[in-house]
Image (cartoon, rainbow, N blue to C red; front, side, top):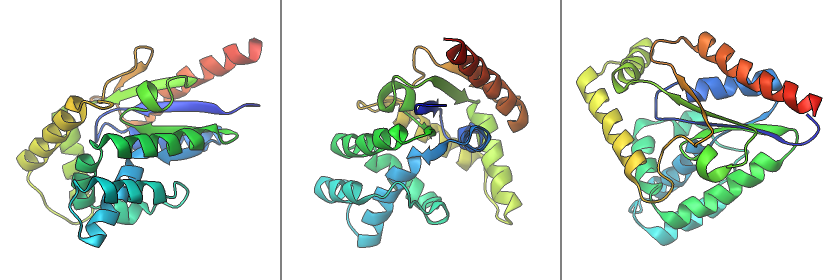
Length: 216
């Protein structure tokens, strides 16, 4: 890969795109960015300062200060931060600031795997590979419940399902950069697919593109 190679992965929460992105980045030795963490970093900063999530000026300042190479997944993965992030993400100026940072990240050699909600449509519309990873809301809720229980916690399936459906509606319905598959994205429905099968399917798509590029 002589010039930056970009793999864009989009999809709703819990579809498996984060795990798939990590596997692909490791396999092809590319940089990795979970763009959702950039919005979570902004939300976390506002929560930390005790500021309203709709404080546009403060959110813009926090967005400009986000360091994409130093995102603490452990801290930013908290449920409350995720809820706050989906509210911060609807602020157009915050999106523009972070999208510019994400594009710069993608340009760094040898290339990158970026996962999020608008990578193939907005952040990297010229990405070499675009994947849209999805699964039914019920399956995603069941996975989230299993994850919580595996860590010794407990939760209610109906509550998790309602939360996922609410987030989907917010992400897909926002005016600025709504969640949707790019016209040229490869669709991967993981509802009845284990991560290994999803990885092999994605890898076949990437290998095919690389083979054609090497012949050119």
